[in-house]
Amino acid sequence: MSAETNRAKSTLTLEDYRVKLRLNEFFKSGDRLTLGHLLKFLKGNRAIKAYGQVIETVGDDGEIEVRSAVGNTKHQLYTCPTTGWKYFYAKVPVDLIESDDESDQGIGLQPRYLIPEKVFELYRHFQRHPVLQPSIGRVVDHRLKLFDGQHKIAGLLWAGRREFEVKIYMTCDLRLLNQTNISAHDKFAQTRFYSSIMVMKLGSLFGADFEEYKKDESEDIKSEAGFLKWLSKRDPGMTKKADRTAQFRSYLYNSVIEHAENKTTKFVSASNKSTNEKPLSIDMLSKSIFSHFMYREPVEDNMLTEAYKRSTEMDNVVALLNMLHDLGLHNWDAAAAKGDTEQRKLTRMFSSKSMMAWSELLADAVTAKLELVDAEDRERPLYRDLTKVQLDSAKFVVSRLFAWKFWSAADDAIDNVIAGNKSAVKQWFKDHGLSTGYLLGASE
Image (tube, rainbow, N blue to C red; front, side, top):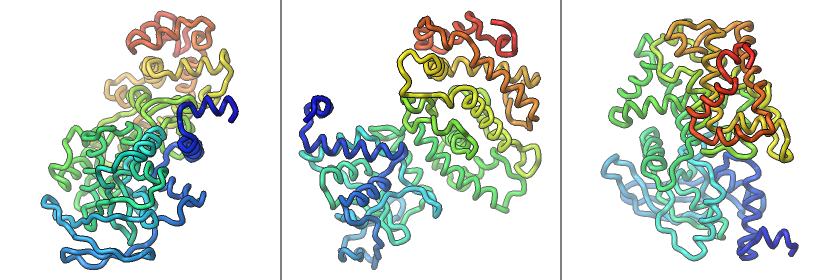
């Protein structure tokens, strides 16, 4: 072995190091990977013969028979005392499982993306330790789809296991099961959700509910505030009002991040923190651009009238994000040499506390440039139709932000500052010329 490979292997056995290399190969294929992607990868590499095969379930009087191309098995059928849902336990071959991912056919219940470190840790753990809890899935469209325990299954797959203990729901209320699953992976989890995953999961869920609400003919006037009341009536007691509002914000965030015209999407990390390749995180965006430029409360405006501007607001927020992209973020280069002036500038600008601080100044300058004086208008700066002239004036403000000399300065004093708290960072910016007046065109 070469010295470089030996250092990379460290104290791992040769077999563990081989698995780690293959894991790295798999995770290089994307940053939103689930068990479904892993099964496809393993089949493509001939590590497994099949997955997701069709099953048929017969009987429901205390016993269920599962029939498939790999054989028939019988299992005792149980009933949940709370919900009345039917379920059973089984040892299931890999040929029959697939991930409960979202698809064109409907919402999936898979709440997480695979975390590389966790998969490898579980792979090593299961070489010596038993599996304490079964994974959980449901039967839908004659297939067994797993939505809980995918990291466990992934670790076992890499360890060579080809059969898995699973709890399988035959009947369920999809919406309640989805909400239960999200809570299990958020409030009551040992390993909590990445905030980005929560945003995308809830955003997708709320999006589907929103479309259902719009088609409901029982209400003549439809609004976002009415939508949340509609959800409370439909699912009484399922979610607290504060949680509904948080979920609604996730829907707004996701709508912007996944917007077809958003150029910055490729720079948004799928984890809680930014990475070398993806300098933005949803947490950063929610505390900066989204916090200051989006109206994040449900509005009373009738969706069927021109007063309702949410779609326009999202387009405007995307336009603002694209300004950040076009004026500099597109130059982000994780492989840039140390001392590269442009990368130094972007690293400073898009650090967490820095972004939170300058976004407040940017919001003040943009609202001034748009001549928004009324308090309600300033709360909703982009919740309106904007002309090309107005968007160009906003872009001028953003260009001034990028032109501030301290972003590129060789002096590292700014680096010490932006590691501190947001208020101190904002004050330092203002003391050194990055003020609302400067962004509007005054000299530093």
